[in-house]
Image (cartoon, rainbow over all chains, first blue to last red; front, side, top):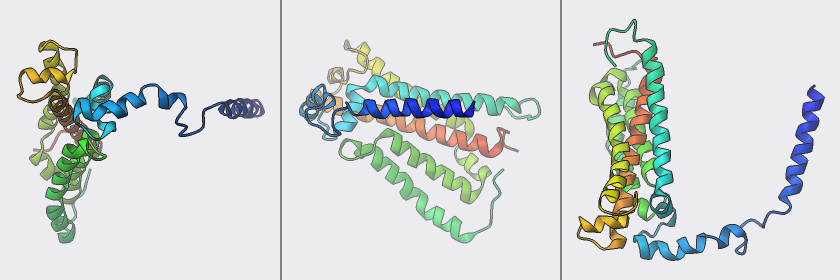
Length: 97
Length: 149
């Protein structure tokens, strides 16, 4: 069974490495990642948002909805830990939460 | 449970370091428009200053400064600031989180309004991240037990 698992990993890993040959070169200015929306962000960020840092403008403005989701994830993680850890001892602890 | 050691060096160093740490957190938050940084990073540094206080002065001292209830309130306020700015833009007639609508209530240009909107939501993110860090640290170091008072 271990040999089968190892063979599967080797074959799939080899396929992935073979497939990676077709990727555009890293940092290629003509690659699909560099010609779709990136020029629009780089040219428009300072004019539209008055923010020289493109990363901040994309994270908090152009994709602000995404960042709100990230904040909700952190909020949910914190609340889940509070519910699990503090709720467990509520029977023996006399203080409120 | 975190045990407090009576160490004058650690306590004095924390006393000196903590205000500068918090000031630096605010700098990272406010300077996110111009340099690497922003809400997440600033919030983590802010939370680290509270955790440093727990390590140096003990859990009870820190929990008197920032109680668990206040921490949960800060957590909710952080998310409320973010979604509140979005909802405000919606109420002013634009899309959700369309900061250019803020020009209707603030005397600034469209670009400046979007810059300010970014700062508002980053502040919310920083508050939320800081509260989660501190809350997790309190919970894990006490096992979730309420403070002995």
